[in-house]
Amino acid sequence: MLFDPRKLQEIVAAASGWLLTAGTFVGTVAAGVKWLTPVVEVYLGAAVATPLTIIVSSLTACLVLWLAYSALAKKSRLWRRERFDLRVRKRDDLLGRDDDIVNLKGLIGDSSLLLIDGESGCGKSSLIAFGLVPALREDVGTFPILVSDPTRVAPRVASHRSNRADRRSVRAGAARKKTPRHA
Image (cartoon, rainbow, N blue to C red; front, top):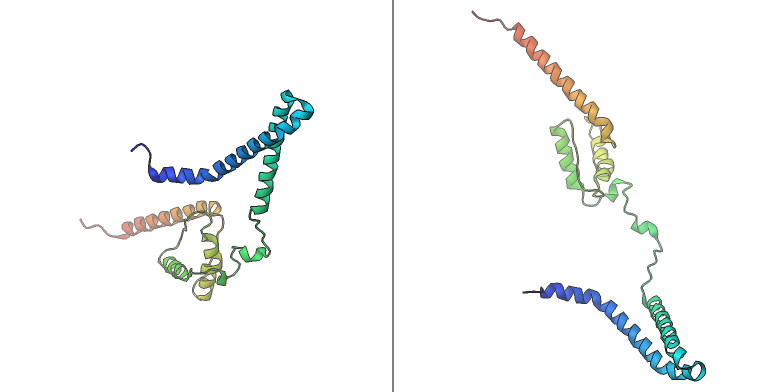
């Protein structure tokens, strides 16, 4: 099949508004030229009447279409902007994230470092700042530290891990030296 009927239907639906506008414009101009040309010919002559009536009819059609659009277009007014503020400012603003907080608390208990990755704007920072950190503060055995710029922490974490690995290898080497060899 050369054309997909659904795709063609979408294109026609999208173009129908513009086609209707263009048809209205052309019809208005043609009607204006047909009606106005004989009237203007009497005063200015046939050579000037036709181009002038086309220009006047076009401008009139543009004005009518603009006025119709202005009158019929939906005007959006936001009377109370605070109702549409989606920023989280307290724990009660986190709707439906209780399971996520419990899961993150469990993950923190399993490891010493937790990295949270997600799309921009999905609520990672809000979940941590207003959900996880207050939940961890409720526990006596934890002391949460919120890091908002990982570029400052990543080198420190890497050096801390390498230092721990070096200490382990030194301890393992020392432990090997202490064990007696049997001949």
